[in-house]
Image (cartoon, rainbow, N blue to C red; front, side, top):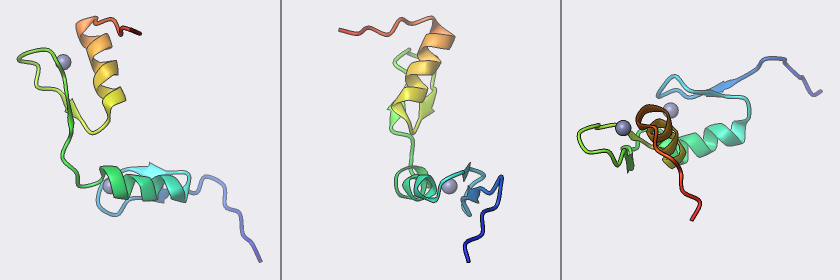
Length: 71
Ligand SMILES: [Zn+2]
Ligand SMILES: [Zn+2]
């Protein structure tokens, strides 16, 4: 018997992240959880850092009005 449960999320036991798909949680555990942030904001003196490059890019665009170059 297969049981489908709505709004079921897989949550990480080491932090507060939760994911809809088990594979996403696996990826989180493997790549993100417990890891030091690898990406830093390029603006001197800002100090923002993240484990995801896209977060840093979003931060730089939103906070520093940086324009993402496509070249
Ligand atoms: Zn985690
Ligand atoms: Zn910044």
